Each structure stands twice: as structure tokens, then as C-alpha cells.
Length: 411
Image 1 (cartoon, helix red, strand yellow):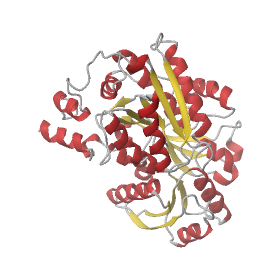
Image 2 (tube, one colour):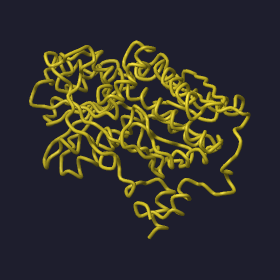
Image 3 (cartoon, rainbow, N blue to C red):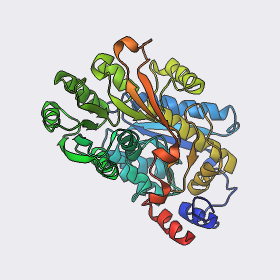
Image 4 (spheres, rainbow, N blue to C red):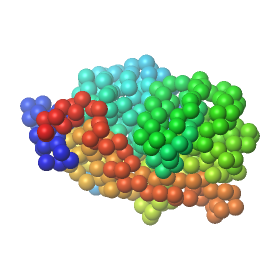
């Protein structure tokens, strides 16, 4: 028995029937082909974009020096423009005409929900470095969809569980699309569990043009905590506006559910100081994260985001697993990904669950005041390290249909 689920049930959850995927199948066309679908020019381009291409190539190069020696690995890329139809059409063409085995990045919730059923249909793998928790919930595709670095649940739960006491009130400024909606839904659930109060939210267009009105509404709510349920440039704009309106440094706490070190650098410590956030990666955690960052920075000219780190780690582990399985069949490789230890310079205490969720140590940070920073990228104080099993939604609460069925089978 493993976490209350039998070995047979685990296999069923991954969809690994013996007839479906021979364990020692040859690589199709003798090549493993990686397709990176990313945002090259839009609101997420700084935390994905070119950096994701660099991270994926680093993973390929590292694996070719070790476990993947002698394999043929290729990478192609395209700009999804934050449009689900463009991303789906590109992915379908790559799979049907160019033999792509695995898709990486796709850090936009609407795109992710469109790609997940496609990779199931085409028997391919999608490696999402983060995104909506639905990818390992009701929209899961075990054996085809793997979610690596973060999801909307852990971005909320890491902070909300720590800050919410009975009666603590929350108000959200929410991006009006799939990512923002999921962050809001998860906040309501976590705050309710802690006997807090959800006072309401105001939604803004994606991408936002002006966040003055939403931030004024949030300030006027009198909530103890104002949370930015958005990402990228929208979060940066929200922090700047909150500073202008005197929210930062007031009795109201400002929380950013998806704030990155690159965002903090962009907005400046003066404006962002005191903001609370959670991330699955920060460059200055330990010797491994610092070593990865130096290698990445030498090519990108900046430190990696959590998404860049997640692209590297997930692609590297996929390739190691394909090499070990001697196959690029989707279900065979994902099963091997769950079997092999996850070891690299990015993640700590990591493991892949049957719902496709990779759990690992997660972190709560507070942005430093300018006077406390000792260097250009010295941006955070570590508030807490959360073990993966505590930070992420428990497998026992998973709504992933095959996992729910396996749970019933185990009883």
C-alpha cells in the first residue's frame, strides 16, 4: 500500500496497461523531440519566453553529457501569443507533422486546459512548470500531463494558511481569466478552512490597462489582506499602484500570489518591500540553486524565474526517464518519471504523484527593504520552508478522476 492506494491502483491511475506501452520500446524515429511553446512577446515573456528556451536547452545538454549520452534529442519552439487556439494548432501540427514527443512551458491557464486533452488524444506528454490546479484535479490526464513547479493551489495555500487566523479578512484583485479565477476559488476554500472571511473581489481585464479602480476598491473594503490574484506585468502594475495609494506599509497587508524575483527587480524594492509571496524556486536557497542560476545567467543575462527553473528540471527529468525506459512512449516515460528519484540543482525533496503533480519543498518569502539588500538580486527574506506534502493539495483530496477511482479501489 502507498498512501492508501494499492500498487495496482497506482498503475491504473497512470493508465499503464501492459498492452498499451511496451517497457523497452525503441525511440520513435530514433529521436526525442522537445517542443517549447512559450510567450515571446507578451505579458509573461520576462518569466517565460527566451529564458524557457535557454532552460530547455540546458536540460538537453546536461542529459546528453550523462544519462542521455548517445541519444538524439532535438528542440523546436514557437510563440503561443497567449492564445489557446494558436497554441493548440501549433501543438497539433508539431505532433502530427514534426514528431514532437513532449511539450514544455505553456504557462497560461487557458492554453494549458486546451493542451491537456490534446496530449491525451495524441499519446504525448505535456510538462507544465506551473499553472491552474485543475491540471491535476478535474482536468487531469495521468500518464500524459505532468505539473512541475507550482500550481494555483500552492501559490495561495502557502501564504493563506500562514496568514489566516479566525476572522482574518481577505479581498482579491483578480485577473479575469482562467488563472485569476482559479486563484480566487482556491483562496475562498483555504480562507474558509481557516475560519477567515472572504470579503469579495474585483476583476480586471487581462492584460490590465489601469489597476487604480480595483486597488481603490480593495483598499476601501477594509480587508486585513489585499491579494493580487494575477501574474506578470499585471502584478507589477498592482504593486506599483498599491504603493501610490499608501497600501504598502499600512495596516493592510499586500500579498502577491504570483510574484517572481524578476518582477521584484522590475518594480524595485522601494515599492515592493514587505510584500509577501510564495515560490517553489529562488536563486539563493542553497549551493545548487546558486550554481544553476550562474549557468543560466551567463546565457540569459538575468536570474531564472521559477518557470525557467521548472522548465529545466522537468525537461531534464523527462529525458533521464526516457533514457532509462529506452522509450519515448508517453505513458512509459511518465511511469519512469514517477519511479526515478528527482535530483537536480533546482528542486528539493521532490516526487511525482499519480495525479501528475510533482511535490517538493516550497517557500514563503517577504520582499526586503532597500537598506537590507546586499546585492542586485538579494531580494527576499525566507519566512518559511514548507515540505511538499504540506504545501500542495493532499493526494487524498485530489479530484483527478482516475485517482479518485483508485482511492475507492483501495478501500
